[in-house]
Length: 168
Image 1 (cartoon, rainbow, N blue to C red):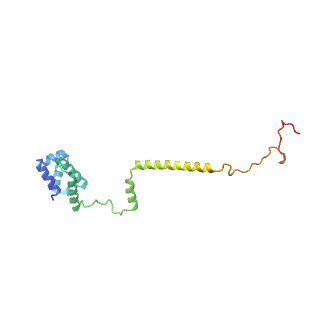
Image 2: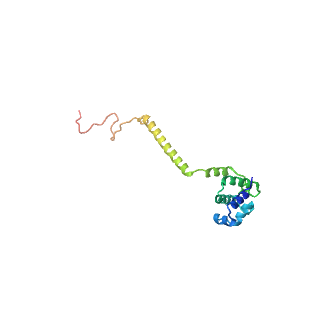
Image 3: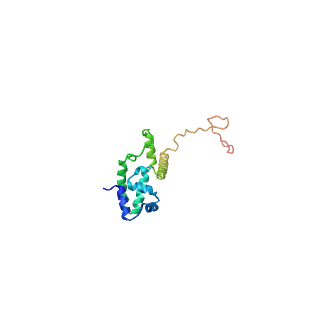
């Protein structure tokens, strides 16, 4: 199978376009176009630039970019410089790194809506449970028996009479 560089060069030559014309259409420097057509990927600092340039190049040449990018990924993995993403540090990955990665994948708008729905459901459930327990509870439970206490120094054996009523 032809390399990505050969596929792009033959497609460009078949459409009778020059490297300068491709550079003007794609806004990619001509030396980068030449480097892609020669398969010289060491000119680029990161594979993301190569993939983007090749995708733009395929669009101009009206090539299906899917198979070309797949072939490009195979070719980049074969190189020493772009075989795998460079490590950001020499430290091993920890549980905090894993947790941070998982939290970065959360759609926080949906999570907030879900949390609010959960809080509302918990409040409704708690209200229903409280209402059921208060309905079944004895209203007089916990009330001590009442004792009449006179406000005057009368004996506790007598109940004071209303002074407006005649005594017998």
